[in-house]
Structures are given as C-alpha cells and as structure tokens.
Image 1 (cartoon, rainbow, N blue to C red):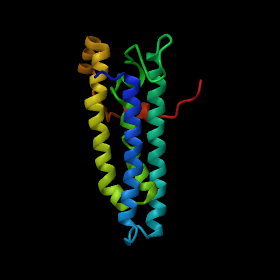
Image 2 (cartoon, rainbow, N blue to C red):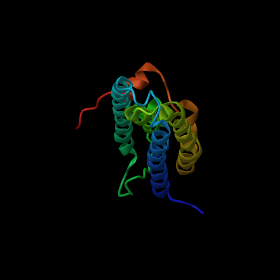
Image 3 (cartoon, rainbow, N blue to C red):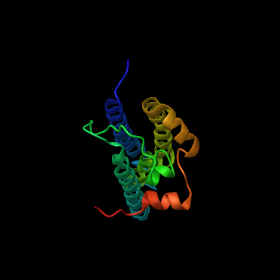
Image 4 (cartoon, rainbow, N blue to C red):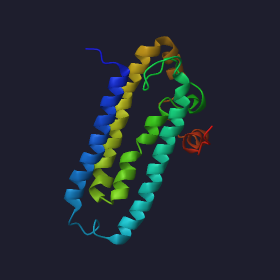
Amino acid sequence: MKINTSLSVVIRIVLWFGMLFGGAVVSLSIDQNTPLFQNKTFHLISAFVGIFIILLAFRAAGNGGRELTKGRVGNIPRLETNKLVTSGIYSCMRHPMLFGLTLLPLGWALLLGSPTFITTVAPFEMLFIIWMVIVFEEREVKRKFDKEYEAYRRKVPLVSFKKECLKMLFSKKKSS
C-alpha cells in the first residue's frame, strides 16, 4: 500500500504528539510522590531551561520550514514539496526541522519538571524521532527526488553540529 507524503507526515505528527502527551501522563504519575518532583527550586530551574529548549526547537522548525517552502512550486498540497531544497540551512544538514523538533521532548519534560520524563522517556522519544527520520523521511525523499537526492545525501550530513550550521538553524529570522 502506497501512502502519499502528506498523509505520512500527518500520521507522524499525530504519533509524535501522542508520544509527548502520553509520556507526560505516564511520567507524571510515576513521579508524583518523589522528593525531586516536589522540589520547587528544581521545578523553577527546570521550567526555565525547558522553555528555552522549546523556543529553540520551534525556532529551528520555523527556520527549516521557511527554507523548505522554496521546494513548493505550483499548486501542490500544503505539506508537499516538488523541488529538492539544498539552500540555506539545507546546505548544512538534510533534516534541520526535525533536528530542532527532536529537542521538544526534552524541553517538554523539563518544563513539566518530571525526573522520569527527563531521564527516561524524553531520550527514548528523541531516539524514536531520529529513527522515524532515518526510516521514513529519507525513504520518501529518495523516492521523490531519486538521483538528485542521492547526490545531495552524499554531500550533506543528516544533521550537523558545526557552529555556522547551528547558528543558521537557531538564529532569529525576520519576517519578510
């Protein structure tokens, strides 16, 4: 059965939100009576760090998304692209939006101040997001852009931790 890209993206988004909220419910129920979870100082510090990480995650997704709109030529569905984007942040890494959004489980866990979510659930969810990128995103883009993507894939890493790439990913963009 062949699923179109837009439906595949929607399924992944629903799965992703389900993991975030499901992980929160399970973790909070486990942590409810633990001393660290009841520590107000821990919650205050954790919440500030969590908000910062969440803002970084959304900034990265926004920057990647703005660049990705260059791949929409003509009248095509909203979540689709029909041109391979290799400019801007996509010249540094192949999946900048998902790299940024991989930070979201950790930010959410810190915001909630759940030790179980921070140390166990969020890292698992982050690895699951990376796995989804490697298994689904890479396969879909390869199918869609074939040899052009294969050449791009050989030159550009999945993610990059180079200073200039991270600056591009997390910089505040002005609306045009």
